Image 1 (tube, one colour):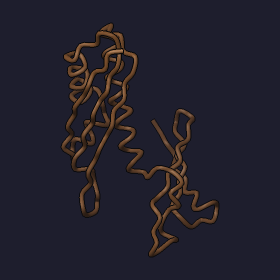
Image 2 (cartoon, one colour):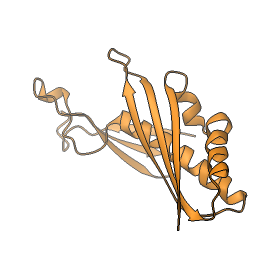
Image 3 (cartoon, helix red, strand yellow):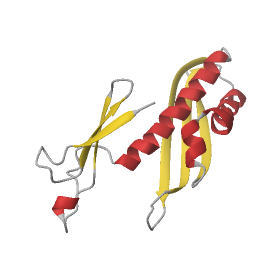
Image 4 (cartoon, rainbow, N blue to C red):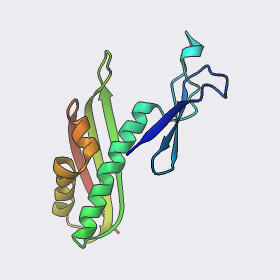
Length: 149
């Protein structure tokens, strides 16, 4: 796996904190920093997600992928899956994630709550590399609901 991240600056001015990541699979991801009123040249323009937001989103995508795949392999009729992540970060550098809650909403027809609970546990205990890595610094908690469609 590979990825190249290039600093774009602010609209090509080489000030600001905009970046474009080019992934090994041929996709791009734009990131930007938060504006800094005290030192505008050190801040972003709020044109894209922050790098740490993309890290959190990646963890959500990784675990949601696992949950859907595990439920489908169990022959459950899954029609939707979303996960809302809420995170807290350390006060001092490095400002790692210290707490993350992942709330899953799984929708489908006759999907047993026990199967969803098991899929989430399997993702976090075995399959989701992102969650396992983030779990080294953050306390990760999960919750879920199942919606009948």
